[in-house]
Every structure is written in structure tokens, then in C-alpha cells.
Amino acid sequence: MIGKTDILEEVPNVRQESPSERRRWWISRELELTVWQSGDGASRGFQLCHEDGGEELALTWTAERGFSQNRVDDGEGPAGRPKRTPMLIHGGEPDARGLLEKFDRQSAWLPGEIADFVRKRLLEVGGDGDQ
Image 1 (cartoon, one colour):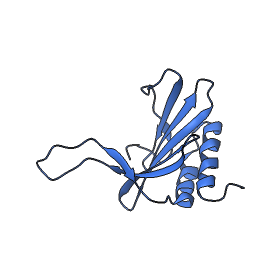
Image 2 (cartoon, one colour):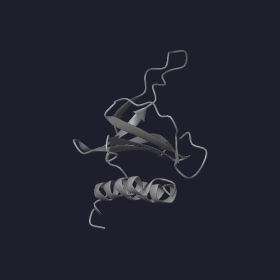
Image 3 (cartoon, one colour):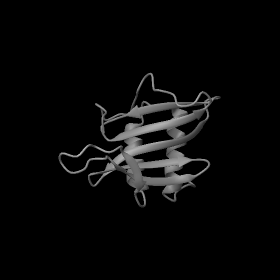
């Protein structure tokens, strides 16, 4: 990851992709969190990037599609060849419990409603949605 601390810190002045939706971004040494919010500030989805066994993975949740986990193909090819555009490819089942533990350790500076939103979804993917 690209962050400098062990706590998720918000990146200021994030480029917005849609006038009707706000994108917010937090980074730490181990995690990268993007949250999409509607115009009224309600969280509509998130993507939590993390490393597992040397691979970068992205767990995404949206109300329309539910959960998906993808591996990040960074586009690196053989030496001397141009780098391709990074892309997401199917990445198997997430380690929801391990990811929740990392998230809980690093989410102290997140706004409470965002931390609660992501935590609730991580509990759902881990099968502990009743907690």
C-alpha cells in the first residue's frame, strides 16, 4: 500500500467522478479504502484494498451488486515490454475475519458512520451479520 501510517488517513481533494456521488479515499500501510456516498452523505458502496500472500486484493461492496473480491493485475509484463493498464480480475473468496481485524485496528480516524458501514458489511461477508 502507499500510506505512511498504521491508521487509515483521509486523502484530501480526491477527484470526483460523478456530480451526484462523492468519492472519499483513505490509505494506510496495509489498507486502502474508497467509499462512495450519495448527495445526502449516505454511504452507497466501498472498496477495501489489501495484500494477502503478496497479492493485492480488492473487496468491493455495492447495494446493486453485493460483494466481489478481485485480484489487482498491476499490468507488469516481461522486461522491456510496456506496462499494461492495471485491472481487476476474479480473486476468490475473501478472508473476511482477517480483513475485519485489520480494519478494526486501522479505522480509528474514520468518521463513525463510515467505519460502522464498512464494518457491518465485512461482518456480512464473513457470515457474522448478526453481531
